Amino acid sequence: MSEMEKKRHSLAHILAEAVKELYPQATLGMGPATENGFYYDFDNITIREEDLSRIEEKMREIIEKGVKFEKKIVTKEEARKLFSNEPYKLELIKEIESNEVSVYKSGKFTDLCEGPHIKNSKEIDPESFKLDRTAGAYFKGSENNPMLQRIYGLAFSSKKELQEFIEKREEAERRDHRKIGKDLGLFMFDEEVGQGLPLYLPKGAMLRHLLMEFAMDTYLQNGYEIVSTPHIAREDLWERSGHLKFYKDDMYGPLSVDEKNYRLKPMNCPFHVKMYNSATRSYRELPIRWAEMGTVYRYEKSGELHGLTRPRAFTQDDAHIICQKDQLKEEILGALRITDYIYNALGMKDLIFKLSVRDPDNPDNYFGKDDDWKEAENSLKEALSSFSSSGYELDEGGAAFYAPKIDIDAIDAMGRKWQLSTIQIDFNLPYRFEMSYIDKEGKEKTPFMIHRALLGSIERFLGVYIEHTKGKFPAWLSPEQAWIIPVSEKSNDYAAEIHEKLRKNRIRTVLKKEGETLSKTIRNGEMQKIPFLLVVGEKEKEEGSVSVRYHGNDEGMVSLENFIERLKKETMIKGL
Ligand SMILES: [Zn+2]
Ligand SMILES: [Zn+2]
Image 1: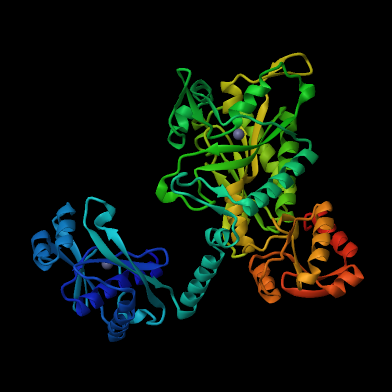
Image 2: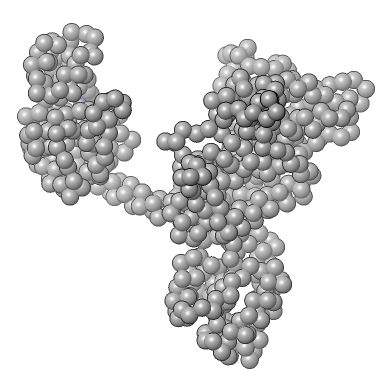
């Protein structure tokens, strides 16, 4: 156990001691260290948030007394006596198999505990911890047990670290995509529609559309073709693909159509394979690159759903590349280059590449020919080496049983890593569906298949992207690029004229003319993160211009033509 963990766990004991001093009737549950601090569960008391500072003070008193943590081994019988007034501890003692029970004493407090602990409470900086919040929690996490009251604490090695953690957490809350999504009117969820099923409002749907259009456009420019497939397919297909065997828990139950069972698709791959198999393929056709914005449905436990980053329905920017052995490396490299281009354009330049290969000690645990694995792993390695100057992480044994892969993490504005893109080679589907092509010598061969999703899930990407940008999207992705705000009723006609002109130039504008004051409308536009606010009055009308505010900066008067040129340029080059 690390020193920090020992301190955190020791603070849990000190918390329990403080609570017992202030509320002698309290009974004790359990109190472990957590990722950022500690907690302790209590029964027989009601602690409100405002009581926490009093308990905190008590804890500081105990810490400053310099109490020693001492381990003692007692018999079960002795333990039962020690904790005779603690029903939950008695419950825990029952579960101990050995007759030797470890307890820890610190000051006046004794707890049932294996340890380890710090030696003396003086080791803790009394300013380095804070009681954070209370919550209800079932004893031992089971709904069949009573609900206890949990007090959570934060603890770090210094006051500074604690402060930094709290600030970072507050920043994360301000960036929470669910909050921003609501504030900007991007998307919503509805209980009656169902959990984990996002509904995009006009602005959010426009953002999503622009993102997908950009991605698909990029793929088309790089030699991909677009395909489209349905949302359900017969169970026979999922049987053959192996999904019903290996992926069943992530799939929804059967739907009956004409006495046959169908399933919602958890992946798009088998459809693409079917299209490939619909004709005899020649080496001359390869590589085939088929892309689809495919909506898939996967079961997530309700407790694990989280806004857009963890929904039950999501759309992948999915594509499958079917190629010959000697084309593998070039195809992987191509996918890496496109990933880099897309993330650069979106302002997420820091990417981390992770290569997952076979466990070298157990090559037999994997499906597919040894030679093919070697070829695939080498292609991935070579592509990564020639692409990424900063190197990549290697995970030996991280490959799925049917495929080595590259996962790519993007780093957001808060330094958090998000795994978004995957490039994966698959030995399973070509085998199961007997995919083939005729090579130069006229012989039938099995092609290689690459799955790749570069944004990954559009929903998850958007969730991350909203948090990364705080909802301040580049102009080319902004659902509303400009608001036109007349200074008074007299300028309404001119404002409408500009609105028309900009719309004809494919600039997404909103004409604001209802009642609110100029300053209020401007403030509202800034809160809505509208890139351009165009204020127009008599003076602007005379000169055929607009007064531009760009993300809060007053840029003064600009002729309408110049403004259109500028926005068009920004839209064209995708912010690069
Ligand atoms: Zn302990
Ligand atoms: Zn696939």
